[in-house]
Each structure stands twice: as C-alpha cells, then as structure tokens.
Image (cartoon, rainbow, N blue to C red; front, side, top):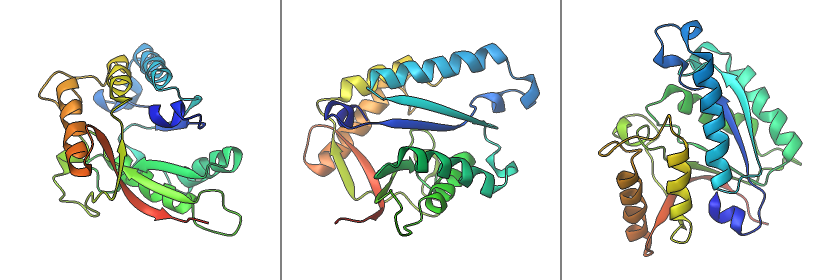
Length: 207
C-alpha cells in the first residue's frame, strides 16, 4: 500500500470486522473504549502507509460465520460500485481466521467479472499469524505468484504495524518487527530483491 501510494495511486481500505470483541467471553462484554482505540490505531497505521481513506463495517469479530454471506457480499459490492477500483486485494482464503476465509469468498462473489465490472484484478495476501498458522492445512493453500518489491517502503510498513498497537506483538510472534522483516527478506530472496511482499493471483484481466 505504501508503494502504491507513493506512486500516486489512490488506496482505499475496507475493514469488515469490528475487531477484538472475540477476546471477551461475550461480544456484548467487550470494552467500547478498546474498540474506539482499535479504530483510531487502524486509521493511524493506514496514514503511515499513505492510504486515502479507511472504512469500517463493524461485523462481529471471528463470527462472520454467523452473518449471512449475502449480507457481507452486498456491503462489499456497495463500496466497489462507489469507488470502482481496478485492483482489489483481500485476505487469503485458506487462513486460520474464519473471518478471512469468509471475506475471501465474499470478495470473489462481489467482484464477479461481469460486463462493466470495474475490478480487473484480485490478489490474495498472507496475514501474519493467520496464513502461516494454518500450516497449509486448509484449502486453498497460499501459493504466491506475484512479488512486489517493498525495499523502499519496508520501514513504512514496520512503522504502520507499530502504530497498530493492539495487533503489535513481541518476537517470536509473527506480528513482531523481527518476524515481519524476516518475511519480507524471505520473499525478497525468492523474487531476487532485498524485500518483497507475496500475493496469490486469483484473477487478472489485462486489456
């Protein structure tokens, strides 16, 4: 996102889940001030990356399987038709997190390549502690075929993650600075650059 922003491209973020309420015994027991802080941190992290705007839907955290799939699809469709993006990035469908898996399916439905549909490319990204902790036991497995050089924007990525205080962790957690740097270097070595992010190409239409 930081690289695309620096290249002058508009970057929009849609966060479907409310976040962290699953950490309470009951959703209604979640601390409202913690949710407010989470959203503030999310906005701060995205500013670090140069994102144009961040939108929140507020679906129940780790409970997307309790929401009709069609309702999720329609929320995504509304934003797609408003912003008309040509490229859409989404979580990987084989993630351990159930919300990610359902989001992946909903995105594919919402961006069907119908006539006049704006989205021409869909890419899936790995999520630290969700894609890796699935240990490739769920289908589909993460099989990246697109690698983006982030050598010039890696520090922005680390700073953004650090700003996302509720999600930031200490090493050896996958969302620690050391692990994030290691992942970037690992994918960079695969692609022949110093640091990279890896994406699975779901579909791509080129004129």
